[in-house]
Length: 226
Image 1 (tube, rainbow, N blue to C red):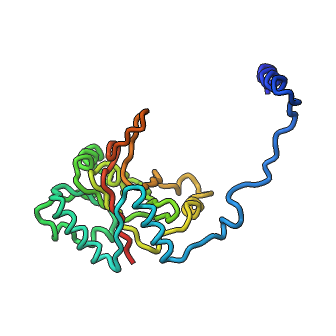
Image 2: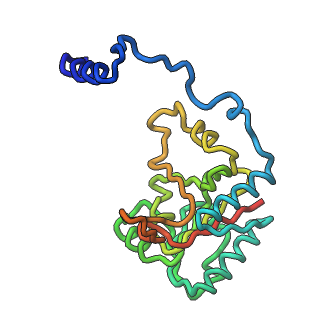
Image 3: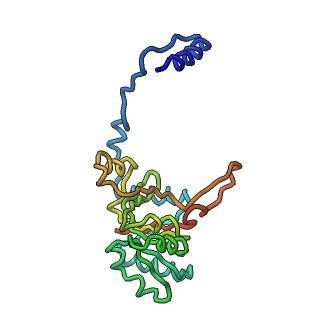
């Protein structure tokens, strides 16, 4: 600590009538307490709590037994919304659904690392973006999406509507369970980005005037599958 900093702190302690501390304060506890580390909900409770918190944040959630049922929902929703431009994450399980065959009048784009500028423009003009998410978190009503060259973050951030497909076996109780999966990893093993999405985009000005969908999708769906 410099002499100037010491003088500044000494001035404060004098005014408070307290002696100046000469030792750094002890911090005996680090991280979450033991009772929270061991806290775990069963699957049905995780699903119920996630849907409740996702709804509170302005999102819509639906549960399906199979990916085929989720596919049918997407087809019906895209038809209802008259979606003409859809962008899909480059994920084999998602592409295997064969959505373009079910929506022949719509144009589909699959994210690919080549020609990034054109893909960004297509994502920004897309009616719906669809991705199978990496994780879900019950206590915060959050879906977690990682990005890389093959899986662009723009799929979930730029379209008007975002549909997140969440396999229930990826649904965690606490946010810390997701974070520990990345803790201690080497830099080369990290994804390009880790994105936490809790409902639609929400923005407020200095007067607390809330607007939905300014910096991201205004409508978000979470499809829990399994």
